[in-house]
Amino acid sequence: QLNLPFTMLKDIVVSTTTSSNREGWEFVDALETKEVCNRPQNGTKLPIVLHYCERYKYGPMFFSKYRLKKNIMDCNKRLLQPPPEHFVGQFNYSLTPPRADGKDKKTYQAKPEPIKGDKISKREAFMLCGLTSSINEALVHHKESACPAGTANVEKTYAVFNDPSNT
View 1 (cartoon, rainbow, N blue to C red):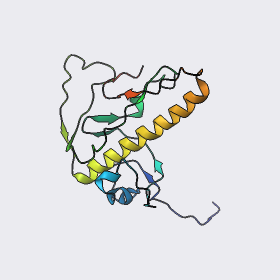
View 2 (cartoon, one colour):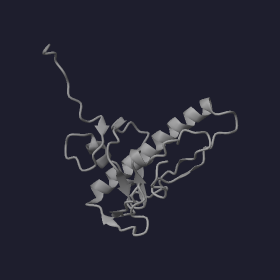
View 3 (cartoon, rainbow, N blue to C red):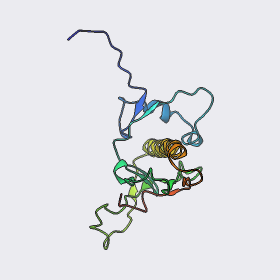
């Protein structure tokens, strides 16, 4: 080992919404409810990396990288449906969609699962809004350069929750 000096930066990334103090959640926790999905433009410090390694769910919204369609970058595929405006603070539950393999197709019933506190609700919403926005931005950029003129589907109507299969 070279024993080089280093600085540990824990405030620049968020991923696990139940994390106590090893991520940059303090910045998100300090946001007003209305700012969670509509980022403040006043120089407010926020994490710059959204490490999506989990499932994120808040109310009827759900995201898992494993549930994204494998062909989501195709020109005819829709963009992700963003969360409704002003949805932060409206729910104290989350829903898990049916299994991707369809094994519970006949028995699945959406069961509200309580979210433990406003802080976790705010964090889940932050991840859902941030991930949806970032992925859509990347998809639009890709489609503008890869799809023949006028063929890119940029409708923001694809809901991961309503389509558990990722084929």
